[in-house]
Amino acid sequence: MIYSKIRFAFLVLFLSVSGMAKAQEDAGLWTSLTLQHKFTQKWSGAIGEQFRLWDNMSRIDQYFTDLSLEYNITKRFKASLNYRLISKNKETYYSKRHRFYLDLAYKYKISPVTLSLRERVQEQLTDINSSELGKIPEWYSRTKLTAKIDLNKKYSPYLATEVFYLIDNAKEKDEGIDRFRYEAGVDYEFNLHHSINVFYLIQHSLVSPANDYIIGLGYTFTSF
Image (cartoon, rainbow, N blue to C red; front, top):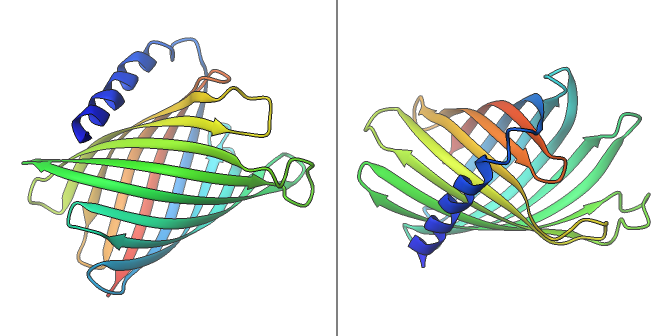
């Protein structure tokens, strides 16, 4: 089961690259700050803030707060419940979005590489009190495959790809795969409490079509 999903993700990655050449382009910057607390060996919680810049990093596109509760079912399998409050720049105002999502993640190590497969199901409500469609949710399934190299050092480089599948929506949008992400980055752990993540991400939309080239920097503080 796990290997079939891995093959599917890589197949989608290969097929989608050919559609990126004629797309519009933009550059972005994503920055994040996360505070994480491990209650027990199995339970942990986190709160995070993120700002995203678009238009060649010239304006804030959105900022949001993330809340999450994670449970390690086994050493390889974990689940988390999450809520995200999003403020999206609509030129004259910031649109409010409420996103609820469930993550299921499985990892398998083939030394020195660790493969992680994450399946996310998310529901999002947009402009609940100011739009006729505000109370009708938009549903996505998001599959992400990550390959991380364990060098027995403080830093761990990785490659990842993610597929967005639109399940249902209230707008005139066709259901199906509408977005891909390709990411290369490195996680660096200073010690047990402090870590950073630096990455470069290409986001390809099939709807526009458009390509976004994104630099990301995130900091995480972990308490026990």
